[in-house]
Length: 217
Ligand SMILES: Cc1cc2nc3c(=O)[nH]c(=O)nc-3n(C[C@H](O)[C@H](O)[C@H](O)COP(=O)(O)O)c2cc1C
Image 1 (spheres, rainbow, N blue to C red):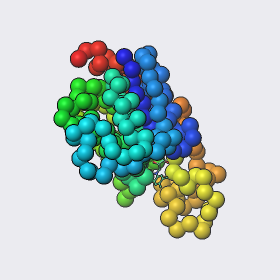
Image 2: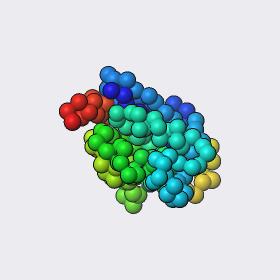
Image 3: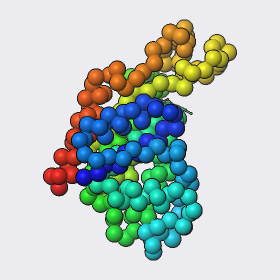
Image 4: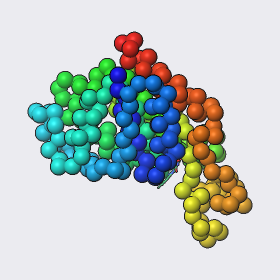
């Protein structure tokens, strides 16, 4: 059995990447990790040429990635949530799997799972939590392709403002929005997935659950 893990995060060795690697590592089977920012993929143009050929006419890395998903026995898609939606690379990747839709449902029956990193989690008054949105974007792809959705894991990431030195000049600081008016990059802790034992355990379980789902089908 082989699991393909795809990360939409462009940040080097990000929480999203590391969370995905925890799940892949726990699976105990063959895995491949893909970072979408290392590839050139454009969005689907909805030309529907792929319905005849199960292949895309765009001359980029879309067909290469699609073939990796086709050859894998299971798929874990990991993204993050700019403006509370799934990130654009992850979205483009899912769109570019469309050639596998026609007409044979080539992803059908494969176990799939989602991992989504977001900075704003449940419980912040007046701010929408993004993780559910991100997970459902990936889950909806898997439902539409008749895959077996195993589950989605939400990971707490970091606001980009932690890396910004605008300090008090910024009128839209997510740091102040989330942690109060005195929050600065110096007094807000950086979240690392490895420091959250519950998240690590949930990711490891996702890794073993997806293998179990494959062998039990
Ligand atoms: C342009 C941009 C917009 C963002 N907007 C949101 C948001 O609306 N909600 C949220 O929870 N996180 C938001 N984030 C934060 C990311 O979700 C967060 O940085 C995530 O942890 C990134 O994961 P990474 O560490 O794996 O790269 C935004 C990040 C960027 C770069």
